[in-house]
Image 1 (cartoon, rainbow, N blue to C red):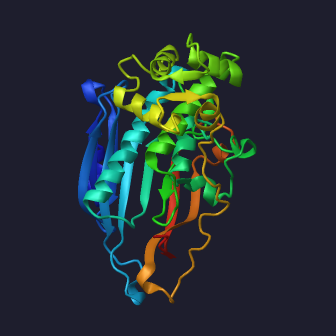
Image 2: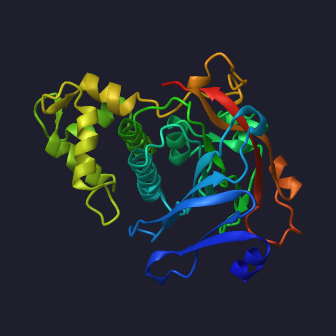
Length: 352
C-alpha cells in the first residue's frame, strides 16, 4: 500500500524489515523531484531486539544556491527504531544501537571522503531528552531540530514542554526526533563519548542502589587489598550491573575500550583519582546551542573554506496539543504524533 501510493506520488521508497521475522520495520521515502539517491545501505544489528537502520546518501536535484555557483548538496539520512527501554538493563543496548550507527557513519564518510556533509537522523528513538541516548547524541554534535526551532534547551525545565508518543503503558513522552549535525559542528571523539555514556549508565545504576562515590569505588575495587581497581574486578563489576556477560551486553573489546578510557596513566590499575575523573564525575554532554543558526551567515571573504549546511527554519508536531505537553483523547491516527521539520540551506565556514 505504502509503496504503491508513495510511488504514484513521485517518491522512491526503501523498506527494511526487522531481523528474525519480527513483522515490522522501517520505510524511508524520498521525492524524486528533490533528491537523487546516490547510495543506500542497510544496518542489521542482529542483537537483542532485532533492530535495523537505513542509511541513504542523497544529493539535491536543484543546486541550493543557483545564482551563487552552488552545486548539488549531498546529505546523509539515517532512519531507525530503537529498542523500547522496558527496564534499566536495556539502556546499554539502546546506546549500543546508536553507537553502531555513528561508527558506521564515520566509516562511510571516511571511505567516501565525505568530510563536510550534513547528517540527519530520524525515526522512533523510544527515549526522552533525559535519557542516555539523547545525551550521547548531543555530545556528538547533534541537535534536536524541534527544540532548536522552539528555542528549548536541554535542561529539565524544557524537558516536558512537548510530547510525541503515548506508549503501551499509557504514558505520554517526547521520543520522536529529527536530529541534525552540520559539518562544522564540533564534537568529542566517538569512542571517548561512548565510554562516558556507558559510565553514566553505570553511575545511574549504582546511585539507584544508594551507592555514593566512595561506596561505588569500593564496589568496583571488590576484595582487592590495594586501594585500586584491577581489570578483573572491573569486568566483574560490569557483569554485576548487567552490562557484560549477557548476549546483548558489552563485548570483550568494548570492555577493554572502557578500561583504556578509565586507566588514564596506563599502569594496569585504576586508582581513586582516575575513578573520579573518568568514571564518576564525568559529563556526557555537549555545549547547549540556544540557536544552531549562529555563525551561519554568508561569507564571501573565504569562499575556499565555505561549506553548506542547514538551519532549522520551522518544526511542528501534529496534533497541536502535543506541543503543549498534552495528548488529545480524540486523536486515533497513531500512538505517535508526526514531526515535521523545515530546513533551509546556509553557507558556513569549515572548522577544519
